[in-house]
Amino acid sequence: MRTELCKFWLRGQTCENRDKEQGCGFAHGEHELQPKHGLNEKYLTSVCKNFLEHPSKCSYGDRCIFQHPTMDPREKQPIEAIFRENIKYTAMRLFQNIPKAEVVYINAYALQTPRLQAFKSVAPNRGKTNKAPCNSKC
Image 1 (cartoon, rainbow, N blue to C red):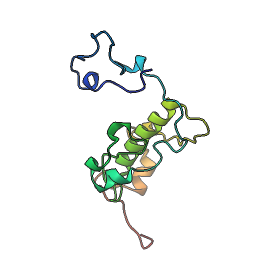
Image 2: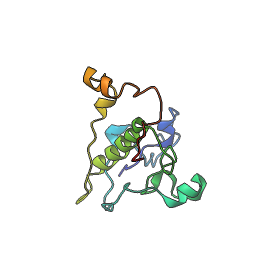
Image 3: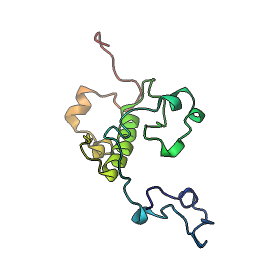
Image 4: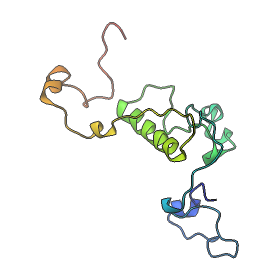
């Protein structure tokens, strides 16, 4: 059962194992990809502690059941970057169809649509800086 994409296929390289007698055990395209079975309902819901210490500390790599974020989650990130990470992990969890797992849906389309004029007058500087405006409650 092909539950992961072939690393050669992902890089756009020819898979040396595909033409061998036993074939390649990995998927060569999303159409061959099958969901994994027996995943915990917490799959990809928290960051890998080993990865946070140093990416090389996680011995599972791409097969890890925890998140390996592209940015340091301990630092403040732009909301668009947070949404992109959330979209990625939400899509990965949805594909697996994990029993009893809750999924949060975020409207990613809103990141690419122009803002209404009413919002531009309330927060005119949005998008010009990575820092959110701060008031006395920060």
